[in-house]
Image 1 (tube, one colour):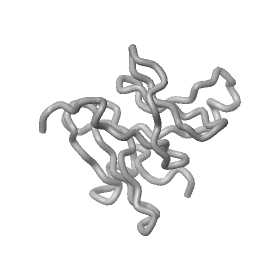
Image 2 (spheres, helix red, strand yellow):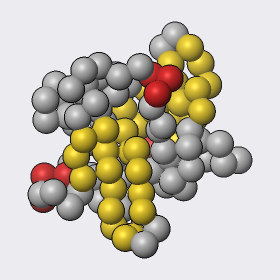
Image 3 (spheres, one colour):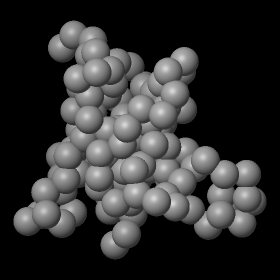
Length: 116
């Protein structure tokens, strides 16, 4: 698999499953479009919350799914409403994919449904 162009990628908010849009360019930071949502993604950090509130940061569990090929933080690329627990994670660098159904590795790394 080759490297992916960031313009071809569709980052989903792990809480709301809506597409995130680029908020800044250097580095590219994606933000959830839902009003009040603090979820952001940056390809070297992975998912993070745009807040300094220690209570919020302590309460929220962020998914930490790493690419098995290059260790890069993966992003949520697809959910399927008919299969509530299905999650497809993708690597922004090499394009590798991982689902939480493939093995228990994804679930151990936080690839499951954070809302269930």
